[in-house]
Image 1 (cartoon, rainbow, N blue to C red):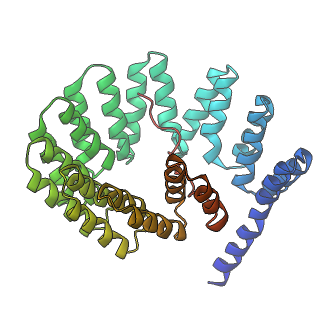
Image 2 (image 1 turned 90 degrees about the vertical axis):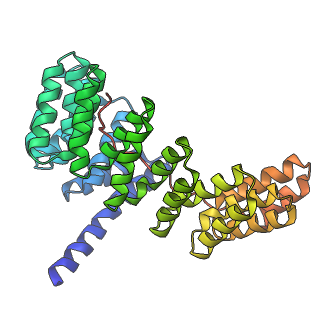
Image 3 (image 1 turned 90 degrees about the horizontal axis):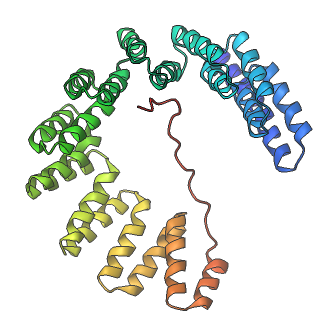
Amino acid sequence: MRDGMSDTKRKAGQRRYAKAARASLKEGDRAGAIASYEEGIVLGMSDCTIGLGHLYIREGRLSAAEEVFSRAVDQGDSQHLAELARIRLKRGDKRGAIGAFERGVVLDAPDCVTGLANLHFKDGRFEDAQAVLTGAVQRGGFHHFTHLARLALKLGDEQRAVEHYQRGVSRNVPECVEELGQLFEKSRDLGAAETVFAAAVAKGQFDQCTALARVRVGRSDEAGAVEALRLGIDHGVRECVTELSTFYSSRGDLDSAHEVIEAAIERGEVHHYLSLARIKRMEGDRTGAIATYRLGIAHNRADCFGELKRLYLREGDVAAARALNTDLREPAPEPASQSPSGGLEL
């Protein structure tokens, strides 16, 4: 326990270098930022390696960026191999990029399998791309069944794609469930799509309840769709709240939509204040809608602030909009989620 605590404190202490570097950049002190990043790199901080490398990339200094990531890799930090490969590609060093990707594949470094497969695909070396992905699957990287399926689709082999997706589904790869079901939807085989999504839900993948509901609506099974969405809500899938309330409101059943949203808010899902305010406006309850927007703002919902401000401005009530700025202050928006890099671009 003591060693673990010491390690935690050590890492927390190291993180201050990246923080100091970012602060220096905000103040226009580039030299100070580089010094802080370099101090962190000496202590083995990956955040500082990324920060300094990306600083050089933004400045167009690709050689300097390559040196930063190459140095980290040489010191045993293999997680930077994909970044090193991408920089080499930008510099026109395809052979060097392939070497970095291949080294990363052997070391199971992030993004290197898909990076190398993408490179082969773009160069028309389809068999090489498939070999890279197949090898990764054989080593236990079952999420690459998704990429094998995408490759097959690009090559016009839908049957092979379905086989890859099905193997991924058997290994509980969520992307394979989603994309196989969507493939069947696209071909209008809604029965097959429902089978895929229903099987996933039966195995406890409740985030597929929204897709199952969508397919059931397409098959005119609205009762089944509601059942799927309520099952998702019971298992904490927040998207199902929005989908079910939208389902009801689109059919004019505002009371049921209202009930679904209010129950979610009572469970602490405060991001639904915006939906509740909109429903109240649909009901003609302007006063209730404004009160709900304000409740959302009190829970740091920037979306409620923005929409209430726009409502006042559309009504020509500039004074109310200005008072909103003064009285409530706009809360900081929540951080945007970022998609993982290195996905197969097929």
